[in-house]
Image (cartoon, rainbow, N blue to C red; front, side, top):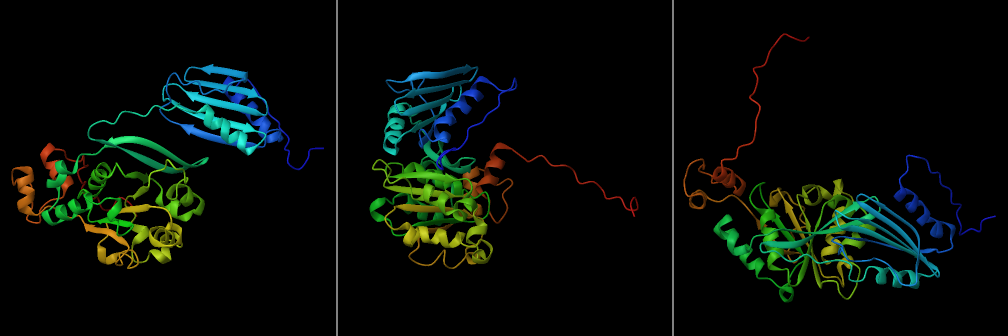
Length: 360
């Protein structure tokens, strides 16, 4: 009879299975059976072509190569290394199971050491991490995205807004006076563009991440701990800025009733117990008017900055475009100005005349 810490392993293979599927199934056996009850998995992006992702003193148990995949199991004394590698995307999944937690941790670090090639920083770009909750828990993927320097985009904002943003760009880790950064205003005014420039300006001291599913983040304490609080490693950046775009439901006046504990957890991360000892900033963009936001969000001392990003006034919009054509007396948003500049117009379907009397 199996002991309580063991589970039976059963599998079926038919002609619809691929070689890599068989390797995946076999890799589960040491962990499921309890022979190696400690497991560690890591996902890698931008893997060096020459990286071996192997361990010394191991024997290859299975090795399956397909057009875009390489699946390998290597075994050693008290451990199993399972590597799934995708050639074209230069991604890999590395799993180690072992007879002790310390051994599993040591071996997975050894297997992936120097395996990732950091992409060269391109002019006009900045590394941004993108978080989402996938099938196997929190997942972060880093990408280089376009981010123009602040000096190049300053003219995109009305003068009072530009002056405020300029002071924000000059903030460093020694002058942080609040943990919440709020950019609000109608769509198309350049809120996200300003945040990308901020990531460029702060890149030497602050890691910037964008959370793609903020409702899930603040609704799941385990996800929040993984993303917002980080790993605690010595190599982790001293400051982290989490960007949450278009979070109207989370911070508007009735958020406490509609979002449950989500708003409380957001505020707790900025200046409550949850945020103590961790240097985490929260950047939020919203289309809501400031007056409609929850008062707890905008109270003094909580916000590093609360900036209304509005339209360019008529005179500044004309100067930006170089001509008055198409600009109304109320001015224009940045998106409208770019549309006028490039001549882009959204495709529309002409409104059909309504017909009456065809249906009862």
